[in-house]
Image 1 (cartoon, helix red, strand yellow):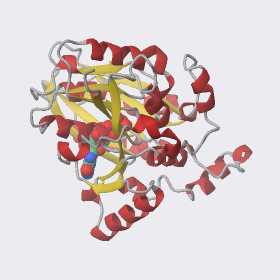
Image 2 (tube, protein in one colour):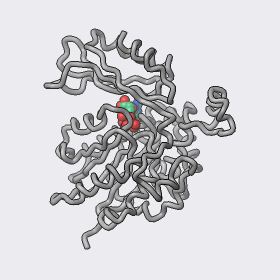
Image 3 (cartoon, protein in one colour):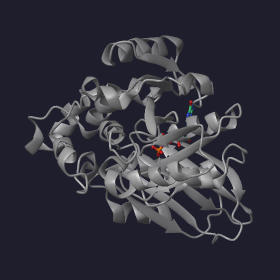
Image 4 (cartoon, protein in one colour):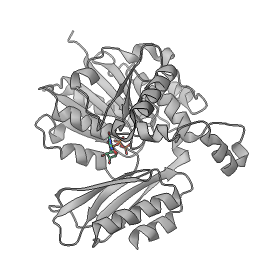
Amino acid sequence: MAAKIPATVVTGFLGAGKTTLIRHMLANANGKRIALIINEFGDLGIDGDILKGCGDASCSDEDVMELSNGCICCTVADEFIPTMQKLLEREDKPDHIVIETSGLALPQPLVRAFNWPEISTKVTVDGVVTVVDGKAVDEGRFAHNVAAVDAQRKLDENLDHETPLSELFEDQIACADMIVVNKADLLGEDQAEALVTKLKDEAREGVHVLRSTMGALPVDVLLGQGIGAEGDLEARGEVHHHHHDDDHEHDDDHHHEHGHDEFESFVVIRPEIEDPKAFVEQIAEVIREHDILRLKGFVAVKGKPMRLTVQAVGPRVDSYFDQPFGTAPRLSQLVVIGEAGLDRTMIEAALKA
Ligand SMILES: Nc1nc2c(ncn2[C@@H]2O[C@H](COP(=O)(O)OP(=O)(O)OP(=O)(O)O)[C@@H](O)[C@H]2O)c(=O)[nH]1
């Protein structure tokens, strides 16, 4: 029987740097043929677009498969397994499969799916790489003590000292075979070292914790861990069973809610803008005002054939011209993601102003 194709699961919270890490990996693949399955939260396929646009020979369009909006861990039967089967039926098989989960996905149910008979003899989980936004963690965005603030907001839930953010973070850390502390450039040496030590303590025994900037790690470090993660799920036990996973084992067809109902996203469309610098400042202001977790998309700037890619994670906004609009309509489209209860009307108005 042919050897199983190794698959690496790349997980990590919204904006941690998963796409950036994968893009670096594809650009430096050393001839390895890597197929990608990507899934993101929000209605615009931005990550897919960025990855297809990477222009690297190792990253052709047909090697990037996008799962429609939703969460990979909740659409295992409907989407993930059929996509994987399609990939595995190809004549021209990839050397490695990389799966980028949405920032809100729990990795455990996805890893469990590799035990499904439809795929279990053909593919194995080489390892789970959890990308962490070093700066955000250092600032305490995922810390339990944020719960104090949250509890005030949701008095009815004040027995639960977890926030949706810290729960997801813990689940993603518990499942990791390798943790990448990304955005090291935004951390001081001591901060980075302290964070690495802390995460080593929180992770399972023997998990490597590496630092990176722009996800720049050698492909041979990230891929080829040879773990077979689907075989040791107990060790990666979900920290938060109350979400949905018991149900999943019996009935994967249902779309159970877990973290998702605590988060929401929508797309804002606006006409061309005049001044990119002013618009970026406007975005930063809206993010601060409304506590937006993630905002990204493409913006049309008057007089510029290229589209402006905007990437905001919390209060930090990056922007750059990436490629011509081509035949796509010259519109600005931004996906906004935050905890449930965003003031959509106000945010739309502020972004369209
Ligand atoms: N300063 C700094 N910025 C980074 C680093 N890595 C990624 N970024 C930026 O962070 C933003 C988010 O990066 P992505 O790679 O899109 O993050 P992601 O985890 O794929 O995001 P989602 O798919 O939305 O969950 C982008 O603006 C990146 O350029 C880093 O090491 N340092």
